[in-house]
Length: 237
Image (cartoon, rainbow, N blue to C red; front, side, top):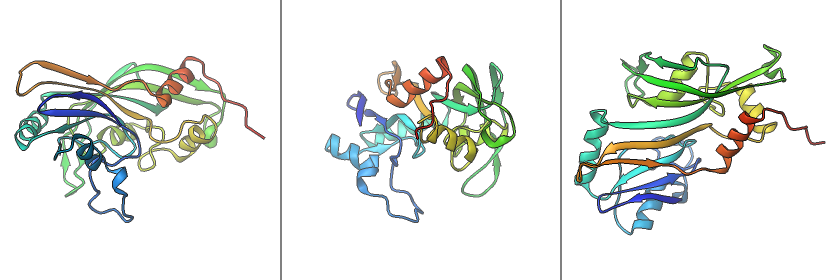
């Protein structure tokens, strides 16, 4: 775990995929403390810390913690009032338009009530591989997109792209199992292809603009190389 930003009010870390932000409320299986970032950051900072937003277990990238209840309250207000900008990178099935807006209501995970949800995206690259994944089409097409969620709904990016028939790769809950398996077993890219690349906001204490960005990593370097030179590695015998 890498510290990306730190001052007297906040600390931002580069969250690895596979880590929970805080202990899950209804997990069937106990999650080890060393897989919960709240405890890891608390130990690293040697003080109590406050998560101010969430990332899914499978998502990597920028994650912000407050170092006091006052800082947490101010930051939560910015998120509630939608005065932060979160930028993600994702790989989705199929070719999406060069840019688009998804404004489909989503169900709240707590009550099931429909609430407004808005996601915008732009396509960074696309590729086609000569493999009949799932047997429906003779080739497999994928898009690499930059995504901005304008609301903070549960699994918003994952559910929105699934609703427009372009599910994220590696998404076990909302994705396509055939393409997930193809990415994992034949392309060597396992897990959810979603990265919290950037978080921008006006610092609530200094009033200065702040942008925190996640560094390059092996998985996304591999994705970039694949889109630049689309090919399927030979199956090892």
